[in-house]
Image 1 (tube, each protein chain N blue to C red):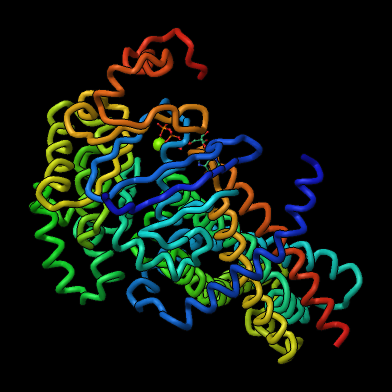
Image 2 (image 1 turned 180 degrees about the vertical axis):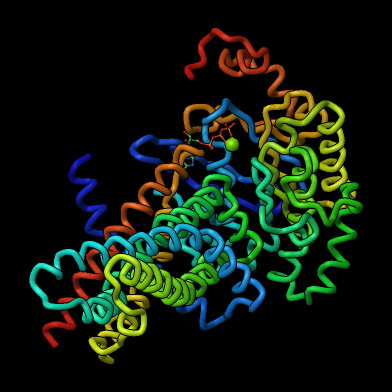
Length: 251
Length: 251
Ligand SMILES: Nc1ncnc2c1ncn2[C@@H]1O[C@H](COP(=O)(O)OP(=O)(O)OP(=O)(O)O)[C@@H](O)[C@H]1O
Ligand SMILES: [Mg+2]
């Protein structure tokens, strides 16, 4: 049993690459209609908007508040707080925290939907009707997640920055125009942020779909697949964050 | 001599170390109504899924119309699945589509019809199962007997040579199952299709079957016309017919 678990874990990256390859192939061969795509994007937005607003809003509030208190001890003034915060949000916390939210909300949704289709034999039925389950189910969700990852990150960064700006103004009398500074943010920070967005956007739907496809044994199996999807996608986001940040630093 | 349509040669299949099929040797004949029966979990669904390539045997060969299909790829199975259709045990309608879209899907995907044409033709098939007025409903909005009828209609859209029905009457009331029996009879006697039915329903078995195959412990225990089944002095068969809770049968 234990050795089975280890070999499973070893196989997972290969399986994921395989699924990614098949998804790309199906996507190029027959792109989904715009209507289906918009439907999925709307779905993702709907599921994660409140979640991301609350999380990123509070993240902005708390980190600017705590950061300013610490900074006051060593710095003569707080004029750089906004610029530093915006830099960190764009290159690190914006994409990553948004991805963690999308992984829990959207990743679990994809795994549950697909898992339910697997255990109720709908995936086999698709094959019988000459419909590739990857083309039909995975591709629209994949493209939609990649796009929405960028959209929600931009939105999340805006929410966090606005929340940070308000607390900086009210509590520390930092002028909003001073706070809203891109002085510390270079193109390279923006690039790292975008690369992360893209990597998370690709990884989340693929890992979640893999978990869904491997659901077995009734509704209990769907539950397990959903849990596995959440654990694996969260883990992947953290690992990818580390790899991309590290890779960028070494470059 | 009747030409053989599906041949199972020494088919074995295990799941997680449990041997479900243990050397099945079986030939399904053209134009006959063959019933496959046996207790729950004996592997009836597993057996019929092998005939359409949804499962691959661990050992043994499967021949369809004399061609060895055991190692067929998904692409090679595609044309086979227009001539040999499977209606799944649990109505596997696609949750995200209306009943009409469900029925139209194989017409579009296998038959290459346009959306408009496929909808028109789908209407005829819905009419055949008395569901024409409910084409706009979603699967979740109708009851299990109606879902079953629609999934049968969906399978018949391709004018298959052989229809495999996995427990078409389980969960239906007496009248609804009599309707399904009539449909099976019509398929076989009027349209000259080969029909394979997986069933528990002894009443319909004795009404429509040409041949009965009784599975027990992964093997074919009895294979013959209904009379042979009824007059069998095999204690296991007798127990099954009488539905006795105790006897030689091991569950
Ligand atoms: N895809 C699968 N993965 C793992 N085990 C499976 C799979 N399909 C079937 N089994 C197992 O194989 C055995 C036979 O299943 P099958 O569905 O063929 O039974 P059945 O005869 O159709 O029973 P029922 O009358 O309940 O439908 C069961 O123990 C089932 O759990
Ligand atoms: Mg079954």
